[in-house]
Length: 259
Ligand code: HXC
Image (tube, rainbow, N blue to C red; front, top):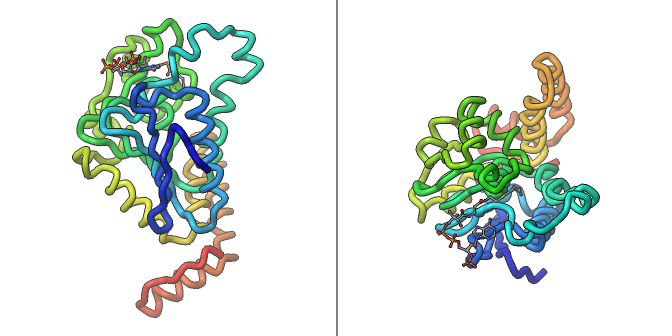
């Protein structure tokens, strides 16, 4: 499909989605979200793709929801349309892993979009923040929840209540929000490298692992361990388990077939 606000490409089993609305610093308007969701759904359903990288430009990953688009909307319309809920459903239901490669601003909905991904890599000049309070609202796409899980209560409160305390890439790394920092021009390649590593594993075990990790945010420890053990056991019904363990015993590389 022809997109106007994103670019998509594939490199082997990795799909790359690049937000491409430079004049508005990739502000997330409804059309942009529609295109992201369309591309994600397509890649999630494509057996030739094993992982996705989501990125923006060097100046901005995304500077938030589109303030000009939403400024005159009314409660009743947003409530009826489930504003932000329907935009974010696709990405949070993705079965394949998504790596966010964040250069520049990840503010408001941009920070939240990155946090909906499974791994975040940052460029050295990345800025993470939740400025919604300065607009008279609060984060609406997971900022109060996912940021708190990632960086803890005090830092999340400080960022969200002031709206102006942001995290640099180095701070995001030390607080656990991101897992690695790279020079801006190397960032996307590094994300693709990691995505390729993941996409070369058995797709079923990758999906199971993602599912189990995400349950850590939903379940008690004993229920989470139970969920994990049942998935682990069911892995023995896959060809990839037989192949992976046979390859180890035979001292060769496994050839996973995603079955
Ligand atoms: C609409 C935006 C925008 C946004 C930037 N632009 N952010 N348009 N919505 N969120 C537009 C500007 O209006 C401007 O357009 C152009 O992009 C360049 O931005 P400048 O401000 O001129 O650039 P700069 O001075 O470098 O400042 C960069 C910035 C600033 C610090 C990132 O743009 C900024 O503060 N943006 C808003 C950040 C924010 O509050 N985000 C939270 C949104 S609320 P023109 O036409 O003037 O050139 C939100 C709710 C959660 O996200 C929803 C979850 C999905």
